Image: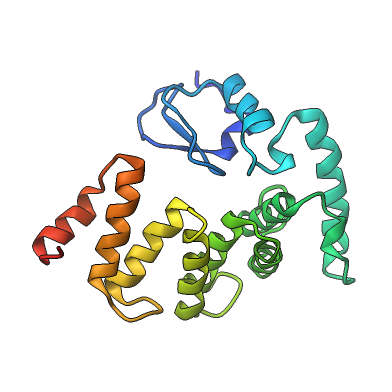
Length: 213
Protein backbone atom coordinates (compact mmCIF):
# COMPACT_ATOMS: atom_id res chain seq x y z
CA UNK A 1 0.00 0.00 0.00
CA UNK A 2 1.43 3.40 -1.03
CA UNK A 3 1.44 5.99 1.74
CA UNK A 4 -0.28 9.25 0.91
CA UNK A 5 2.21 12.10 0.69
CA UNK A 6 1.74 14.92 3.21
CA UNK A 7 1.37 18.64 2.37
CA UNK A 8 5.11 19.31 2.57
CA UNK A 9 5.56 17.48 -0.77
CA UNK A 10 3.70 20.14 -2.74
CA UNK A 11 6.58 22.53 -2.04
CA UNK A 12 9.18 20.24 -3.62
CA UNK A 13 9.75 19.09 -7.19
CA UNK A 14 10.52 15.39 -7.66
CA UNK A 15 13.64 15.14 -9.82
CA UNK A 16 13.25 11.51 -10.88
CA UNK A 17 10.25 9.48 -11.99
CA UNK A 18 10.78 6.16 -10.24
CA UNK A 19 8.50 4.75 -7.55
CA UNK A 20 10.99 5.27 -4.75
CA UNK A 21 9.23 6.45 -1.58
CA UNK A 22 12.25 8.65 -0.84
CA UNK A 23 13.02 10.20 -4.27
CA UNK A 24 15.46 12.95 -5.16
CA UNK A 25 13.60 16.25 -4.63
CA UNK A 26 14.32 19.96 -5.04
CA UNK A 27 12.75 22.89 -3.19
CA UNK A 28 10.48 24.96 -5.45
CA UNK A 29 11.63 28.19 -3.83
CA UNK A 30 15.41 27.79 -3.88
CA UNK A 31 18.03 25.46 -5.34
CA UNK A 32 18.30 23.18 -2.28
CA UNK A 33 17.87 19.52 -3.12
CA UNK A 34 17.64 16.33 -1.10
CA UNK A 35 19.03 13.20 -2.72
CA UNK A 36 16.77 11.17 -0.42
CA UNK A 37 13.51 12.86 0.47
CA UNK A 38 12.61 12.76 4.16
CA UNK A 39 9.50 14.83 5.03
CA UNK A 40 10.84 15.92 8.43
CA UNK A 41 14.04 17.29 6.87
CA UNK A 42 12.06 18.90 4.06
CA UNK A 43 9.78 20.67 6.54
CA UNK A 44 12.75 21.84 8.62
CA UNK A 45 14.27 23.32 5.47
CA UNK A 46 11.06 25.26 4.75
CA UNK A 47 10.71 26.40 8.37
CA UNK A 48 14.26 27.52 9.10
CA UNK A 49 16.54 27.61 6.06
CA UNK A 50 14.65 28.68 2.93
CA UNK A 51 14.26 32.46 2.93
CA UNK A 52 12.05 32.31 -0.18
CA UNK A 53 9.54 29.82 1.26
CA UNK A 54 6.12 31.40 1.89
CA UNK A 55 4.81 31.33 5.45
CA UNK A 56 2.07 29.04 4.16
CA UNK A 57 4.71 26.38 3.56
CA UNK A 58 5.93 26.47 7.12
CA UNK A 59 4.90 24.51 10.22
CA UNK A 60 1.25 23.61 10.67
CA UNK A 61 0.41 25.90 13.61
CA UNK A 62 1.66 28.98 11.80
CA UNK A 63 0.26 27.78 8.49
CA UNK A 64 -3.26 27.41 9.91
CA UNK A 65 -3.30 31.00 11.12
CA UNK A 66 -2.04 32.46 7.85
CA UNK A 67 -4.22 30.20 5.70
CA UNK A 68 -7.27 31.43 7.59
CA UNK A 69 -6.30 35.04 6.93
CA UNK A 70 -5.70 34.44 3.23
CA UNK A 71 -8.90 32.41 2.79
CA UNK A 72 -10.89 35.28 4.29
CA UNK A 73 -9.08 37.66 1.98
CA UNK A 74 -9.80 35.44 -1.02
CA UNK A 75 -13.54 35.37 -0.38
CA UNK A 76 -13.80 39.12 -0.84
CA UNK A 77 -11.12 39.64 -3.47
CA UNK A 78 -13.58 39.64 -6.39
CA UNK A 79 -16.07 41.96 -4.67
CA UNK A 80 -14.02 44.78 -3.23
CA UNK A 81 -10.58 46.26 -3.78
CA UNK A 82 -8.47 45.18 -0.80
CA UNK A 83 -4.90 46.31 -0.24
CA UNK A 84 -2.47 43.42 -0.60
CA UNK A 85 -0.42 45.05 2.14
CA UNK A 86 -2.66 43.13 4.56
CA UNK A 87 -0.95 39.91 3.53
CA UNK A 88 2.07 38.82 5.50
CA UNK A 89 4.71 39.16 2.77
CA UNK A 90 5.42 39.02 -0.96
CA UNK A 91 6.00 35.28 -0.46
CA UNK A 92 2.40 34.86 0.67
CA UNK A 93 1.06 36.96 -2.20
CA UNK A 94 3.03 34.71 -4.56
CA UNK A 95 1.72 31.54 -2.96
CA UNK A 96 -1.89 32.78 -3.11
CA UNK A 97 -1.31 33.35 -6.83
CA UNK A 98 0.06 29.81 -7.10
CA UNK A 99 -3.05 28.45 -5.39
CA UNK A 100 -5.33 30.34 -7.78
CA UNK A 101 -3.35 29.20 -10.82
CA UNK A 102 -3.52 25.53 -9.89
CA UNK A 103 -6.82 25.44 -7.98
CA UNK A 104 -5.29 24.37 -4.67
CA UNK A 105 -8.04 24.44 -2.02
CA UNK A 106 -9.63 27.31 -3.96
CA UNK A 107 -11.45 27.75 -7.27
CA UNK A 108 -8.95 27.99 -10.12
CA UNK A 109 -8.66 31.52 -11.50
CA UNK A 110 -5.72 32.30 -13.76
CA UNK A 111 -6.58 36.00 -14.04
CA UNK A 112 -6.32 36.43 -10.26
CA UNK A 113 -3.15 34.34 -10.30
CA UNK A 114 -1.57 36.68 -12.84
CA UNK A 115 -2.53 39.79 -10.86
CA UNK A 116 -1.11 38.35 -7.65
CA UNK A 117 2.15 37.33 -9.32
CA UNK A 118 2.40 40.87 -10.69
CA UNK A 119 1.83 42.39 -7.24
CA UNK A 120 4.46 40.14 -5.68
CA UNK A 121 6.93 40.81 -8.51
CA UNK A 122 6.54 44.55 -7.98
CA UNK A 123 7.58 43.92 -4.37
CA UNK A 124 10.75 42.25 -5.62
CA UNK A 125 9.67 38.60 -5.36
CA UNK A 126 11.96 36.76 -7.80
CA UNK A 127 9.87 33.61 -8.32
CA UNK A 128 6.89 35.82 -9.17
CA UNK A 129 8.94 37.53 -11.88
CA UNK A 130 9.57 34.09 -13.36
CA UNK A 131 5.89 33.11 -13.12
CA UNK A 132 4.95 36.41 -14.78
CA UNK A 133 7.19 35.46 -17.67
CA UNK A 134 5.34 32.15 -18.00
CA UNK A 135 1.98 33.92 -17.87
CA UNK A 136 2.98 36.35 -20.62
CA UNK A 137 4.61 33.68 -22.77
CA UNK A 138 1.72 31.21 -22.67
CA UNK A 139 -1.25 33.52 -22.12
CA UNK A 140 -2.03 32.46 -18.56
CA UNK A 141 -4.49 34.99 -17.12
CA UNK A 142 -3.36 37.62 -19.63
CA UNK A 143 -2.97 37.92 -23.39
CA UNK A 144 0.21 36.44 -24.83
CA UNK A 145 3.05 38.95 -24.96
CA UNK A 146 6.46 37.48 -25.70
CA UNK A 147 8.22 40.82 -25.24
CA UNK A 148 6.89 41.13 -21.68
CA UNK A 149 7.78 37.47 -21.09
CA UNK A 150 11.37 38.15 -22.14
CA UNK A 151 11.60 41.22 -19.88
CA UNK A 152 10.22 39.29 -16.89
CA UNK A 153 12.65 36.42 -17.39
CA UNK A 154 15.48 38.91 -17.83
CA UNK A 155 14.65 40.74 -14.59
CA UNK A 156 14.59 37.49 -12.60
CA UNK A 157 17.69 36.13 -14.37
CA UNK A 158 19.65 39.24 -13.41
CA UNK A 159 18.87 38.37 -9.79
CA UNK A 160 20.30 34.86 -10.25
CA UNK A 161 17.07 32.87 -10.76
CA UNK A 162 18.28 29.68 -12.50
CA UNK A 163 15.03 28.71 -14.26
CA UNK A 164 14.70 32.25 -15.60
CA UNK A 165 18.23 32.10 -17.00
CA UNK A 166 17.29 28.94 -18.91
CA UNK A 167 14.15 30.64 -20.23
CA UNK A 168 16.29 33.61 -21.27
CA UNK A 169 18.60 31.21 -23.11
CA UNK A 170 15.62 29.90 -25.08
CA UNK A 171 14.41 33.44 -25.79
CA UNK A 172 17.76 34.29 -27.37
CA UNK A 173 18.05 30.86 -28.98
CA UNK A 174 14.67 31.01 -30.75
CA UNK A 175 14.02 34.76 -30.88
CA UNK A 176 11.19 34.78 -28.31
CA UNK A 177 10.35 38.38 -27.42
CA UNK A 178 13.74 39.58 -28.61
CA UNK A 179 16.06 39.27 -31.57
CA UNK A 180 17.58 35.84 -32.03
CA UNK A 181 21.12 35.85 -30.68
CA UNK A 182 22.81 32.46 -30.45
CA UNK A 183 26.01 33.92 -29.02
CA UNK A 184 24.14 35.43 -26.05
CA UNK A 185 22.20 32.19 -25.62
CA UNK A 186 25.35 30.10 -25.45
CA UNK A 187 27.14 32.63 -23.23
CA UNK A 188 24.32 32.62 -20.70
CA UNK A 189 24.13 28.84 -20.75
CA UNK A 190 27.86 28.44 -20.17
CA UNK A 191 27.68 30.88 -17.26
CA UNK A 192 24.90 28.99 -15.49
CA UNK A 193 26.37 25.54 -16.10
CA UNK A 194 29.68 26.68 -14.67
CA UNK A 195 27.98 27.96 -11.53
CA UNK A 196 25.78 24.86 -11.16
CA UNK A 197 28.43 22.36 -12.26
CA UNK A 198 26.14 20.35 -14.55
CA UNK A 199 25.24 20.13 -18.21
CA UNK A 200 22.05 20.07 -20.24
CA UNK A 201 22.58 17.50 -22.99
CA UNK A 202 19.77 18.85 -25.18
CA UNK A 203 21.29 22.31 -25.30
CA UNK A 204 24.81 21.01 -25.75
CA UNK A 205 23.54 19.02 -28.72
CA UNK A 206 22.05 22.18 -30.15
CA UNK A 207 25.34 23.98 -29.66
CA UNK A 208 27.39 21.34 -31.47
CA UNK A 209 25.00 20.88 -34.38
CA UNK A 210 24.56 24.60 -34.97
CA UNK A 211 28.21 25.47 -34.36
CA UNK A 212 27.69 27.88 -31.50
CA UNK A 213 31.08 28.82 -30.12
